[in-house]
Amino acid sequence: MTHRLSAILTWFPRVLGILFAVFISVFALDSFEGHASLLEKLGHLLMHLIPTALVVGALIVAWRYRIIGGLIFMVLGMAFTIHFGTWKESGLFLMFSVPLFVAGLCFVFSRYSQLSTTK
Image 1 (spheres, helix red, strand yellow):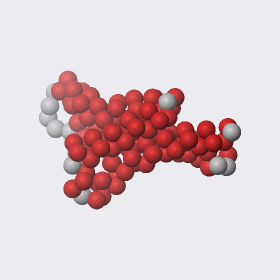
Image 2: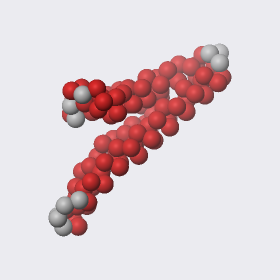
Image 3: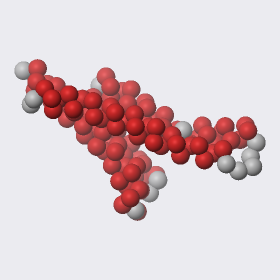
Image 4: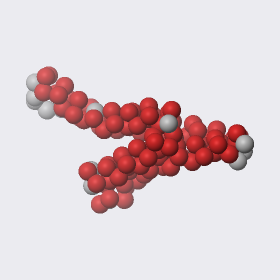
């Protein structure tokens, strides 16, 4: 495998994971709407940021242990698909589940590409 493809497989899932975490964090901002108290709004914000924390945690693991992190990303993709029901609508599935599956596969493949370029 070429060095260029190996570099793409190394950095693409990392950037994708970061961008996805930022993307889903934006949806947490809707917790500030309504007439709840500030404390209640902060509680809602923290609840809405749980998926972001899971993605960031997976990214931290995957940065060092690509195969394990890749598997975690794929499990998160399954969890998002089931919990949020993204399988019901293709647009939601493409927005929320597919990036996690793609990042997971790329992390796993990047580990194997690293092994093949070191030989």
